[in-house]
Length: 295
View (cartoon, rainbow, N blue to C red):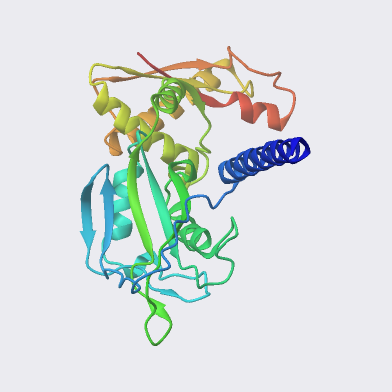
């Protein structure tokens, strides 16, 4: 009888240990698994997707569009954003001049589709296609985040579903905003003023878009432009080049509704403040720049 009790105690201790081990392994796996929030619904009828596409903000619907993105079962391609009237213009206006917001794109996918349980699932790929189009439209890729969203929805007889992509406008962290504003208020730009297409410079366009938002947010600020040139030719010529380049940038910023004649000031430093020696073409290009200070 004593042996039986001893055996029972040993068995109980072993069973408890096994349960604890199973619990901690399960929890650890769930916390590190990339699909921990799939929440597939396996019971009841499949839902029919609303054909409209929404841009939500916090708990509200910010904007609604009549037609959404068409997706095809087991295919990562989606309708081009250009096919949805006004959507690309709306997203562009929401983001290109507002560095305080970002857009989250959710690509829907069903558990019945291929690769449903992988990190790089069809939902992520669908969202990424939309992101690529937005980047081509000039939206900063850092303002776009993509996700795969599992949903137990129904495909039609053609194996298609409408509104397979959803959007959410999100406030960026104050840390990101502070970092962007710090870079806006003290930096160099190097447009190729010798090119007829210098206004199409991607860095220049992004900077002027962000600066437009910053100036609206801080209406009392002044914009100071200092033109620098490489030491090629006479000092007088270099001073004129620096001033002329600063004037061109001032006119461009005014065209972009960034400041006015009264709060943008231009100066020239000519060749007197080089960053690197003026001994190569590469270095001379580095020294030819516009210094921007906002205060």
